[in-house]
Length: 316
Ligand code: CP
Image (cartoon, rainbow, N blue to C red; front, side, top):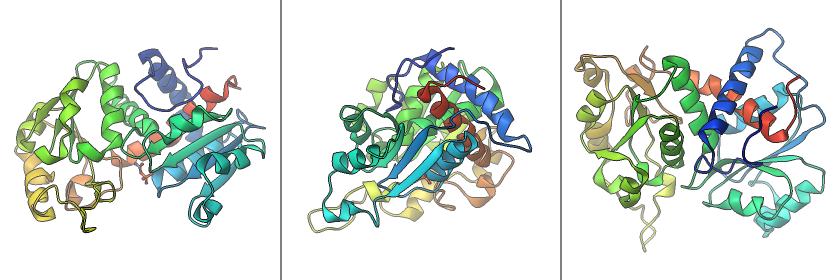
């Protein structure tokens, strides 16, 4: 059986192209499974998985839980709200107590960058990073690239622009690593205040004009403004990176009018949650250009593949 080069999924940065292709090929099989009338396989029977969510989630949390149940794993769910974290328990103590209940794999979302790496150095179970602050969101990038591969086949030399709040986006960083490993040309687009200064070091070009960016690309990945990660000033007021949401939407919001000016068809993606009328208009999000719900569907198959490969079981 082919194996991943790692026993944890902490980020895309340290995966090889072979790892990514193995995940995609395994996800192809699981996508076929979840479209059958009986969607469940016994692959992870007797494996116990803990989903630890220290930060809000809709898609990732439900998608991991569905993936685990489709693989017949035993699942326990933990949310920081309502837990003993509010009584001062540390991350290591919380997780060590959960592991004492004989857990094999931990899926964790945490607001602090590096939390998943820290955990992997201190506990014995396999760790899957379900998003750690502004650092990485590896399964999102995998499902995004898997969805592009489903649409285009080989991704070599395809052109993808990631638009919006790049500076606070773990989705952008993981996608840059993943797409570049698959031979994709990547640009980012957004207001200068939301483009990190280190971006050129990642081999990514910057385009500040959205119309130029979409004229260049095959795929536009639209991102939400991450207000919850933009911080506060010394008086506790939200830091402002642009004058108003209205101005942002005028300059960087994707509308059908903008798409109709192109003499080609491009694919629109978004990791969710969407702010309709800000980064993308409703008619674009719901149009035939959009593969947003395909991304969500593929999330289950891709997460099944990651869980299966990290558990080290053979396909049954
Ligand atoms: N894309 C994504 O991570 O969405 P959630 O925050 O709802 O999990």
